Structures are given as structure tokens and as C-alpha cells.
Length: 358
Ligand SMILES: [Zn+2]
Image 1 (cartoon, helix red, strand yellow):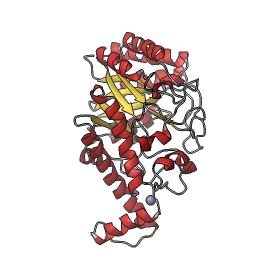
Image 2: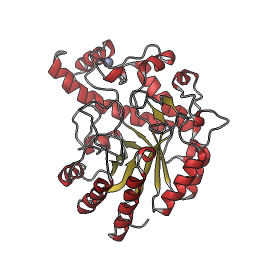
Image 3: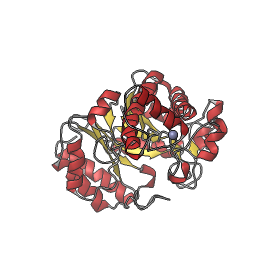
């Protein structure tokens, strides 16, 4: 591509939201790569984990996990997890041959608590998180698991992957003993000057989230020097707490690209706010194209289903609000997108090309 957007492609779950229990196979992905290439795409992100909480058919890791402690969260029904049937290496090589940027993506700190505690018994989830899936980064075992899975995954797929993407950082107002200790240590060091109360916890949580983002990004880059780290935040960039960060925090943490979830955008004005919030930080929009709702999403997180008219409008809004730090668009979730919506995605790309965006 010679235009303004460097990355255009799909994110596809290896098992997440796939129709059958076994997940994707080699034939499916070979066909997809050809289709993407034919339609001017040059980027593919593989989501390497699913969670039963949001997809009752699929729960766990989708590659042949080698670390014995991680094997408790292996999805044994997934074709790609059996070393004899593993096919993703070949698919990644083929994608590289087509000149694609290949990314591996995980959620980070979000696991089925009943399964991961088998390998990591001292792990702690954040009290009150949805079905206790969100785990606390102040806990040593939790951090060990978060880093172990990155190491196992990136070592398996070695040097053929250009970026690693993740979502959560394991900080959200937790009140466990480990968090209290971290807070008290920070107070002793003069990082925070308040007693452990609701306001102080809120301030501390934002500081701690930034610390964890920095530590986790550094850990990923230590595991695979040279890999780019993309962070999947939510809507506008800003230090709002949870896993939402400002461009300044991203720069300090060593994050290379922000890939915010913009799934709840309903009009051009909302998109403009997200783009303006990014300043000059490299941005790749994560655009939802799913035609059916996501299982078990609460009202607060509810993401409306998308249709071709929406996707075509999104394409126009992006043209109208293009800025130089907008480096690309990733459409999600390939496996859960209807043929009509898929056609609309390719139509959008064709229009972008005519307008000089590609
Ligand atoms: Zn905690």
C-alpha cells in the first residue's frame, strides 16, 4: 500500500465466537488470507484465547501450550492446540509471504478463575469483577501467569510475528491484601499521601494502572526484543482508570500503537472525539463488524450489532476525520461477521482506495 493507512485487516478469533467447538482450521484461514489479499488487506491479528464467560462453546488457550503450569487453561477441543494438528505456524508463514503484518492478541489478566487457579493457586481475582474473571496485578502469581502466557505464546510462534496486542492490566479498585500492601508501600515511598480510603484508592488505582502498563509492556519486549506492543483500550484515550490511557502514558510506558475498541460509536461526532483524544500518538481503530450480539455482555458494556449501512457510514466518518497519526483500521470479529457485513467492509476499503487513503 502506498496511501495514508498502513494497516488494514481483520482480527479473527482462533476459537472466539467460531461456529464449531474446534475453532478455525487451516482450510478456513488459507481461504481468508487469499480473500484479504484480493481485497487489499495487509494485516491480520489472531486472538489466541477465548473465555467461557463470553463464549460458552470456547474457554482457554488456542495454541500448543508448553509451560506445564499454563496447561490448566488449554482448550483441548481446539484443533490448533494439539501439536500434531497445529496449523497456525504455516498460516503465519503464508501471511508473511503475502507481506502481511501478523499480530497475536490476548486479553491480559482476564481468565476463568476456576481453571487458572489449578496452575497458579495463589492467584487473586478482583472482588466484584464479572464472575471473578478480572485478576489483580498486585498479586505475584497473577503477574507470573500474565507473563508466562506471553512467553509461551511468543516463543511458540518465534520470530514470525511483528506485534503483540493486549487489553487489560489487572487494576480496578481492588481491595485485597496484596493491593493494600502495594498502597502502603507507595505511601511509605511518598508516592501517595493519603490514608487507604475510597478517594485514595481511586487515585492510586490510576497510578498503579500506569505502572502495570509500563511493567507489562517492558516484560513483553524483554521476552521478544523488537516486537511492537499494541494496547486495546476503550473509546477516547485518557488516564480514566481501568485500562484506559492517555497518549502521554502510552509514550512513557513504551506502547507503540493504541488500538481502542470503538464498538459503541453511533455517530461521526463520537468518532471525532476518539480521534482528537489521540493527539499525535499512533492509532489503529478496532471497528466492530459483528452482526449478532455478544454472549453475556452486561447492559453497560452492551455493544449493538452492526449492519452494512453502519459499516459504510463508519468508512465515511473515517475519511472525513482522517488525521496523520491514524495508522490503520482493524475489523473485528472476522469469524462472527455476516456475508453482507463482510461485503460492506470490502466496499469501504475500495472506497478508501479511490479517495487516496490507501
Ligand atoms: Zn488486589
